[in-house]
Image (cartoon, rainbow, N blue to C red; front, top):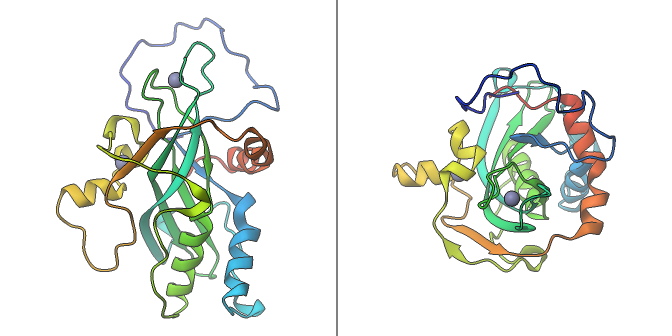
Length: 229
Ligand SMILES: [Zn+2]
Ligand SMILES: [Zn+2]
């Protein structure tokens, strides 16, 4: 678990949290793997003509240190604030940090960085949309030597977006130093950049059915543990 960098109070030993969360509780983490989307990625690769023999495995344990290829980009995601005392129900962002990694055996994984609720600053419950599959499959094909046009940034899944400032204190990708927003700010954005340049945030009701369907992905991500940053 990466450090949250909070200096606050030391824990005094009071047991206010259960040791094991209820099995249906969303696992809140600063970053996630989404093995549950692997089949979608494989389908996208297959649909684009990648032969079965070249289809990669999802790597649940690979870290930056093991990777032969690393690429930082952004996707879109919806977030739900599950803090019961917070009035904000959710938000959507068009600048969600993702780090895609390829390993020596050609397996891959993709770390997606969480965001915090603007109102209460608790970590959100994150649901990436189809941009995850588009971005990851694009990058994998590129690493396989395919030549392609970059995928579109906006409009997938009908997510309406608005422009606004990117808030670093709410973005775990910024804190981990991988957010494309930081690169853009530092003027380093160049070459094969894929990401959106601006944040897209708006109030939006989370899709509960989608949330429930993704529980498995979160459970797996929790078991694998957040990647070392
Ligand atoms: Zn909140
Ligand atoms: Zn950021």
